[in-house]
Image 1: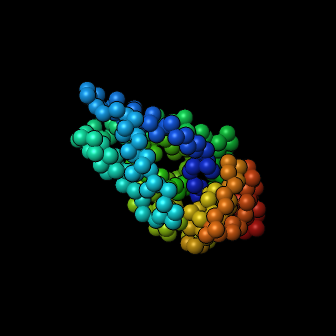
Image 2: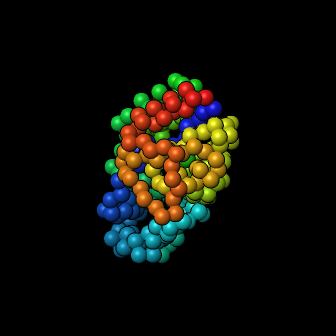
Image 3: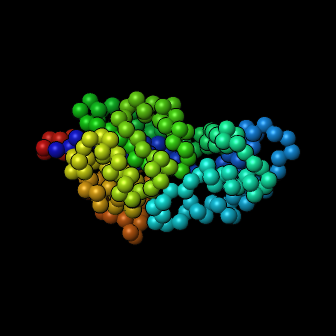
Length: 241
């Protein structure tokens, strides 16, 4: 019997629009948040980041999450900038805020979550995201997601990325449901569909923001072309049970 629905975050409940210029905007905001004089040119820092660090984010099949605060500390250290924990937090917070235009909540996300909850379903979120959890959970609060779900976990909090089973299993345990009682909704065939299927969940490929293809992905049990298609799928599963 269906008891829970879990979602990916980016390009499922929220559309994330990567823009190269936001990389430099984030670094500029972070440096300004340090409040120091005589800092290096932001363009040089961004160029170094894009050449030496950015490729780490695109390694296919990576299961271990990048420890992003440590990476930023290392990046700044390359330019002679030593930061305290408090300063690093200010940098990360300002950088994250500069990326706000890239994060756009789906127009029917709140309605979907509220409709699923009204059916007695537990709701969770499982996302690959390298930013510190305290920033990501703040996003959920500001977007009105936190109050509409029961549990959220990010890869930066557990050190494992989807499709690693640990991040899925931790969410299921928190929701107190077994894999065969859960529906997972995600856009990526490898990270989301394959990962969720391998732990025993029923899967839905979300294609309203993007239609993913991956040679090592899995075939979803269902496809949803709009967010509200997920509600229809859940309704059918509940009726069958």
